[in-house]
Amino acid sequence: MNVKKFNHVVTEEFTNLKTTNQNGNRYYETPEGQYPSVTTVTGWEKQKFFAEWRKNNPVESRRVLNRGNKLHSLIELYINNGFDVKTDKGGVDLLTLDLFLQLQPKLNLIDNVHAQEIPLWSSTLELAGRVDCVGEYDGKLSIIDFKGSTKTKRKSDIENYFTQATAYAIMWQEMTGIPINNIEIMIATEAGDCQVFEANPIDYVKPLLKAIRSYQKEIKTTLV
Image 1 (cartoon, rainbow, N blue to C red):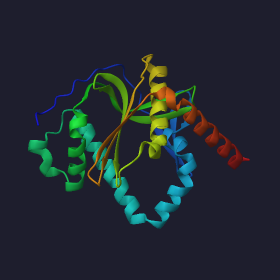
Image 2: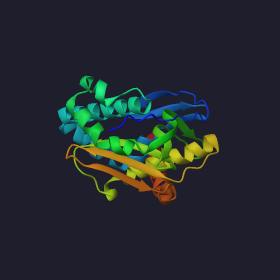
Image 3: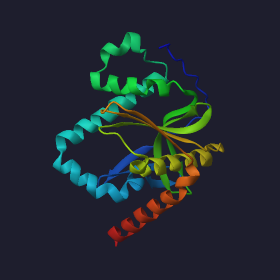
Image 4: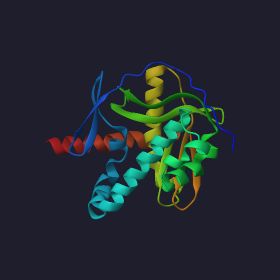
């Protein structure tokens, strides 16, 4: 496979944001005030389930978290033109390398990268978060999210991924004036599958707003 060189497009400088954790939830200190993280809000309804799962499966929970962090770091390095599989793979553990190699042909469809791992926020949504990647995927400007998974996913399993990406699309347009009409969720699985799910953010605005209302209602109830 030929070495891919990614072109990077500087849209604007993005301010880094401080984060705090309250009761296990992440909050960002934005110029408009303190906003909850996108992942906290879009995963709110599943929070209790996953908290219980982590409690009952501490070893696997740490393994999955570590797997995701390593895969994200390697993908970020690759898109920043800092990782060559031919010369650098010796420094990567086998699982991370296997997941990366599954995704590499799809990663090579990305170009004209506008941003990676930068904080975004929206005063309209009152949310903030850190987007994996904003760039062109197969020629379409997209919010691109990278995931590792133990098992193969169905599109119906990952609605929260799409609502999260939709929030980033809204934030991006609010902050830059540039609309994004495409989402790509890229998943490498330990089952050996490379999955890429595509969607239009407009189709997930209602689920996003529902998740925000559910979170706000729960928080207000908790604070009473």
